[in-house]
Image 1 (spheres, rainbow, N blue to C red):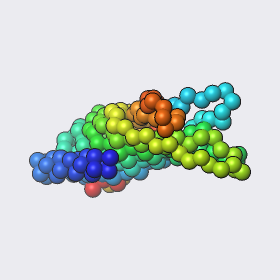
Image 2: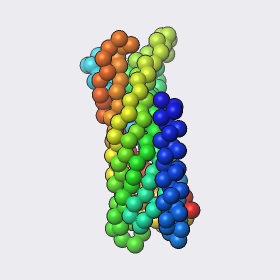
Image 3: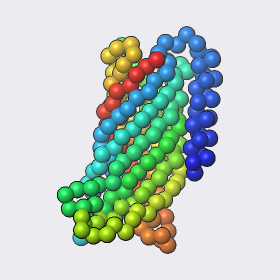
Length: 198
């Protein structure tokens, strides 16, 4: 799986370099941003299980615009497993590395709507509910490659800086036990962030 991620990153950087060569006069065409917000892995929780309703999410996104509307993007997203006052809730730690494209539609001179889509290498670590005084049986890791999609808005409040709101969706596989069959779950993130354009 690391080799897939390295290959995807190399492909994205190569395409970005090619795009840069084609549009050398495009101002502030490269950007890197960070986002923080909420994340949710839609686990199938039983009535007597402490389930995590929502967790903290983080995203790091880098892209290169090759036209006024289109950009290549590389994205890393993370959702933490839920640790609370009474130990771990039944939750899942998510990490995804994606490569895709973003399409911007101007709504005004400084505000744009953004649509995203691509492929993501996803990893889920299932965390059982554990009290503070119980031994943690450990997490169960499942990896998969899935499509992702996103919808957001961007506000360019300075030449080098922009603020954004984003909602993203993907799918991931998980196993309840090492011997169980894979089951698909939906993963959602919602957050706000800042990006530096150069």
